[in-house]
Structures are given as C-alpha cells and as structure tokens.
Length: 185
Length: 191
Image (cartoon, rainbow over the protein chains, first blue to last red):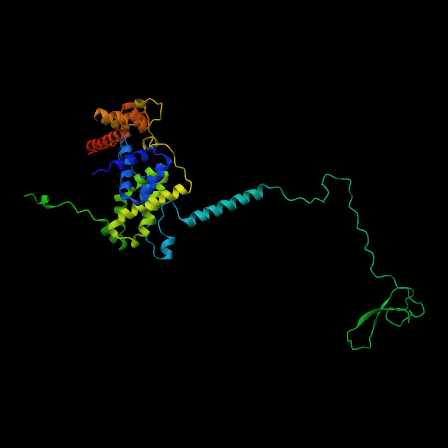
C-alpha cells in the first residue's frame, strides 16, 4: 500500500518545493526510514520519466571505475602493475612530468642571457690602456748592517752594506740548517 | 514435446549469494551487484544532491565503501546497507559545501525548458521528450493538467492546486499517479 504522505513529501522534495525546515526533516527521515528512501527514488524516477528519461542512470564508465577500484590486489607487485581506470601507469605519468620539467628548465636556461661582470669595463671603452701593476712593497724592512762585521769568509765573498743572508749552524738541538740575517754583533 | 521448453529461467541470485561469490574471489558477482543497484542508488543520490555529476561521484564512493565494509553487515540486508551508505555520502557532500541547487526540480535539472520558454517547441527538440509528450496526451485530463502545469509551466504544486481549484494533496496524488502511468506506458512502448 502506498504511503501517500511519504510519496507526496518525496515528490515535493524532489521538486525542490519543501521549505528548508521540512526538507531537513525529510532528510532526517531518509537517514532512518527505508520507505522514505524508496519514495524519493521513485519520485526521481517518475519525474525523469516525464521529461523523456524514464531510465535515469549514471554514466556506464563509473561502473568500470568502481569495479576496478574494488578489484583485490594482493601483492605489492600486483598493485604496481594493476589495471587502472585511467589511461597509462602512474610511473609513466611521473616520468612524463619529470621530462617536461627538465625540458622546460633547459629552455629557460638557454633563453636567459649569459651572466655579466658588473666591475668589468665594457668592450666599447677604448680609452683604457692596460698597465703593469705597481710593485708590491716588501714586508721586510731593510736591515742596516755594520760594514766591518759584514765581511765574511763565506762563498759570498766580501759584501758591504747589503742585506746578506748566510748559512749558519745553530748550536741548539735543532739539526736543520736555517737562514739568519746578519746583524750587529 | 519440445525439449527446449524444459529449460526454466535462470533463478535470480540473491544479494547474499552474490556477496559470498565476491568474497570468494568472483569479480563478476560484484558487477552483477552493481548493475542491480546502480539505478536506485543513483536516483536517491540525484534526488538528494540535485546534481548529476555529484551523484555519480557519490555513487562510486558509496559502492566502494559499502563493499569494503560489507563484512560487518548481514548479507540479507545489503540493499538497506547500500542505501544507508549512499545517504551518508550525500549528507557528507552537502556538509562539504558542494553546490546543491536550491528550489529546482528534477525535470528542470534534467534539461527541461525553463519558465517562459515555449513548452512544445522545447519538448520536441529531443525525440525522447517528444515521445513523453505523446504519451502524456493519453493520460486522463486531470492528471495531464497537473503534469503540464507543474513540469511544462514550472508552477509550484501550491500554484497548480490553486489554478485547478483543488487541494494540494489532490494535485500531488494526480501528479504521482499520472507519472506512474506515464512510466508504465513508456515501458510498454519500449518493451
């Protein structure tokens, strides 16, 4: 037996004619009452029939996608190579995306101008002449030597008034020879 | 005696049998279950969401959720379980703020002429709608009048009742019965 009140409420709900309060009440009924769900389903079916769509059905593609997503895949290898509702494999799309990014980065790199030195003169500036750099000052101050004591018997001969280095033997524990400037005394 | 007449029609497998077959690894059983319920569940979702694509998405999610958790329910109540999950999905989508047209009926959502358009010209655009219109003419006048005013003229049931000078429940009953007859005539025509 048809429940008129429920059928009419479903018709009005499907037609969008219930007030917000009544619509909320009907949706609460839908949560608990299977008869209300059936009434709404029938109201939609009948309303669709009136506009020439008596068999209002979803797109068949959804069926394939749903069954595919529920297909059990036991092993990780099976999951990797499992058929998917979309074309291609995730790894293929990942690789294609990485390749596209690499190509894009290469194009950007090739299209950008070469880096320039801001301190360098421009090639069109012909007034600048290259000059030799100034001599680097010696960090060791000149040593004034005593001319009398500067006379030595080394292979260097008699050298006066110059800063002479000679090889000496240091009477300490050090065994390696070292260079020592000749100073006073 | 013709031996071919001895064959009886294949018995329809119950939901419980199909679920057991699916659990045993028979994927075709899942396809049969889906085929059995995709229409009713989709129409329930469409009635609640008033959006075809949203209803299709919700239908897919409903089946995935329902079948994955089907171990927790009794096989005999699979239909009720499926509708419960569908209702939950629809409520979830509504709470997420997905667009749900307000104040629009199913015929309007399915592409019927808006208010103000010439009804006959719009209907004849599609052959299916033209057939529906032809079948509508075979209905009793009282039912025809309600359907025409509600669907073609896009009047609210309250206004339809007022126009026809009858209580609103009478208009609703004529609408319901008229649409049921229309659907029956359609099925007979396409049988």
